[in-house]
Amino acid sequence: MPNQPIAEEELAKELEISRTPLREAMQRLELEELVVRQTNGRLKVAPVSAQEVRELFLIRSMLEGIVAAEAAEKCTEQDIRHLSYFARMIKQTAYEGNMEDISHFGSQFHTYLYELSQNKTAVKILRQLNDHIMRYRRLAHFIDTKETSFEHEVILNFIVKKDKHNAEAMMKKHVLNSMEKAVTAIKQYENKVNEIK
Image (cartoon, rainbow, N blue to C red; front, side):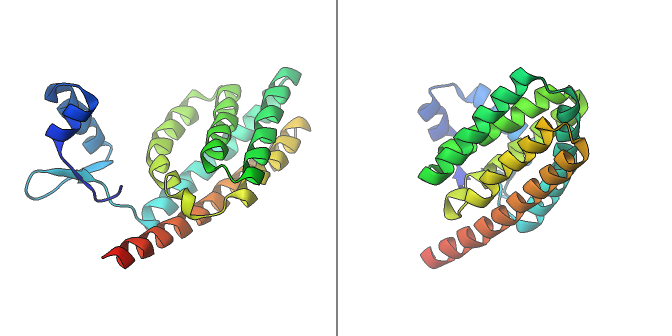
C-alpha cells in the first residue's frame, strides 16, 4: 500500500531470496520512483497523488491514441477476432463486477493493440508508464469501472472500420475517462485512510 514501510529483511524471508537480489530490486524500484528512501535511510512504498495520475494518464492517452490509430491501419480479420474476444470478456466481467478480470482482459486488449501497432518506441514508453499506473489500478476496487469497460467495444468498432482518426480519438477519451476514475479512487482511498487514523 502507498506509504507502507518496507522491511527488507522480512521481505527477503517472505520471498525466500537473499538480501542482495532484493537490494538490487529495491534500487531499481527507487530509480523508477515506485519506492522512496526516507530520511532515516529506510524505504517505503511511494505515496500516491492525483497530480501524478493526471500526468501519467495524459501522456498515456496520447500514446495509446497513436497505437490505436496504427492498429486500425494494420489489423486483420484474425486480429479483430482476438480483440472482439477481449472486448466481450471485458463486458461480461464488468456485468459480473469482477474487477480483477476486468483489469486482466483490459490489459490483454491494450497489449494486443500495442503489438499490432508495431510502434516499438510508443510501446516501450507505455510499458514504463503502465508500471506506474498499475499502482493506481490496484485502488480501482473503490470505484465502478463498468462505463470505461464498455468503451473497448466502441474503440474496436472504429478499428474494424479502419477508422484510425476516430479509433485514436476514442482511445484518448477512454484513457482520460480512466484517469478520472483513478483520481476518484485516490480521493476515496485517502478518505478511507484518514478515517482509520
